[in-house]
Image (cartoon, rainbow, N blue to C red; front, side, top):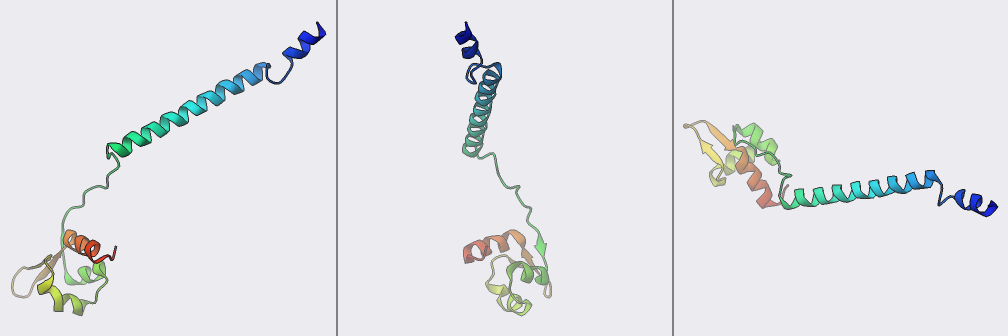
Length: 108
């Protein structure tokens, strides 16, 4: 009888150990479910950057976005496909075009 009492009191058979095992199993199941959710989200391409609207900005803003001098912007505007002339003295630049140019040039 003494031995039976000792068996019940071992750490592996105590009620607390049983609760700890259940808790551990629940945490493992939760981690596996979160991992599966992340994998599904990555496969479904759920995590996407919001699409940016295209805006026309002036030469000062374009020069700061591109990291080029204002003088360079004006001298090279005729070679930049995203530069738009809006009259004889008005020059604007597409923000999406600037972003694409930066990616192609390897500056981003």
